[in-house]
Image 1: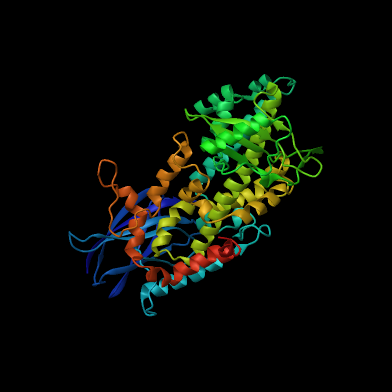
Image 2: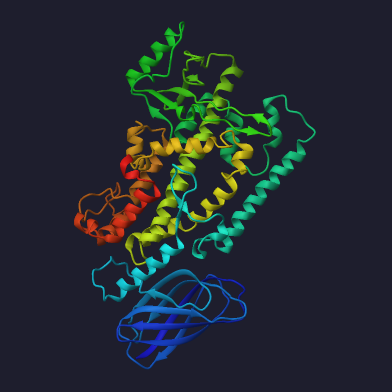
Length: 536
């Protein structure tokens, strides 16, 4: 019994009035109390209330919320509730919410301390997590977008998603404004160039205005240079294709008269300075037809040498692999006529765009993340420590992916209208990439080691990826080992994920004995990734 101080953090209101009535129950181990609160229509703010409770509630376990129903159903997004009990030294009890309240349903929020599932059927927290997962499995269902690809959330459009997976108003406005601004810039450039014809590469300058960056300016001035061409394989938009050569690729057929080139490649190979970027995944993918005009796709191979000063330079380009009709495809060299060599590099950049957008961006990033997001919502309750670690990072995954499937890669979408792999080729390519997907390919230390890119000073992407991985991964194997920086000072950020995980999983048998975690792993590999446990 005594006075309770209650903090209510509001994320958003829809159609908010001057005040909004909310019923709140404090539920403790020895009783509960019902309170009435009147909230201001404030967004991103916390309001504090003081209320006297005439009975002893004991340690608080839950807070229950119900929004007062009015003529206009004003949905309320509650961030969290904090409660300080009687006594000057009482610590705050935290009840995370981060959900919409709609209608007259009562929402039950458990005290926020993470805990694993228990085997006590009478435990109030165990009952809560079982009820929560049952409701989540009803809301978050699996669907098949295309056979042979990762499964997705069952939603045809963003309006079909559960409210708690939708963009917040600020995010939605920012996203839609960016789309409109990009569309407006495209229209203006189209009008500006409507009456002009393009006969030289320099004519592209007519559309190089609007939003720019220092990097865009550098590319604008240096895009033809071999040095920038090689640099992009290490540090550009798609640093995922390059690998150090262990042998000369079998597809690289050297015709008569190129003995000097063969000797150069062998020397680079023996010294460990020969690299390759092979786009064979594109071979045979059907190309799109845009406005009645047939498009084309290349499946090039690029051989590059690493110079002592750290520059990666192209040595030879093969546009297509050998075939019965062309057993020795032509090779393009830096010594060729400038426009021929430039055209070969442009075909490589076009192929790099296809793999970047479809294999490494859409599949490895968006679609794999969606599988993890859906499995998390179906298998891990809000009290689970792994749920708490993951949920900030999958907040908007489902809506952005649903928008992509309905607008970008759908039939008649942007890919069909503008990209050479559209019209169905993009789905063929995704299936091929899916067949090659392994767990280790998603882990930078394993991926970079397999591609021979560790220890290269000019590989800036590799350096940054490994630093980020050290922050989020379990890299210190000895229990209780506190990571330090080069000066011997403790690095708290490097302990965070590992430290949280070890609070709960200090032995392998605890991992094996967590039914929610095991169900989550099975849901990802066996359901979402379509039996991926059989493919590494």
